[in-house]
Length: 228
Image (cartoon, rainbow, N blue to C red; front, side, top):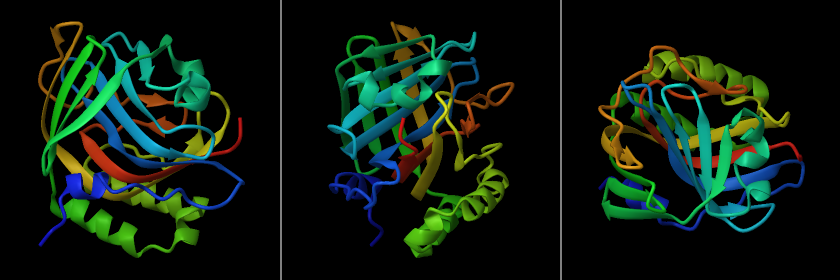
């Protein structure tokens, strides 16, 4: 019987060993574009090497203005690495609630209301299978991650992928999405405004060397950054 994303997501993640990098483990929506030009992403990192675990929701409006909401202090959360590319970062109450084996709901204060349903495809199954077989040492190898990025983009239909690169604040990063699902459907409002139907942006967006996917993707895994 296939383990659901909820079952895997609710397991307490184990923080990878080592002190060369600042490390995070958990899950999130790597990115979800809307045909209207909006963009959302989620990071749920219960395990962190630099402070308490936290949640973060990334929001971009059609004009390209990025705002990051975090449940913890910005200096120990996503703005630590992406702050230079943001119009604003805000501390907020963020709740992630699983409502089914492959569905969850996200709220950010009274600002964002977001529901997500996940599914698997042949491509996500293939990438997840490869991720589960790849030794930990290769997940930390930049050449291997670069090769995986080149394969993952066309295979998943997400545009350009960067599993390794430089964040806007200057740190190098490595992303290790070990298990993948596609977003099957989603609905979101921000300040009461309906973001519309999920769909690829006219031009793929990025934050530094981190390219945001052109279709909704959910991942369980780890992230590494060189110290600030």
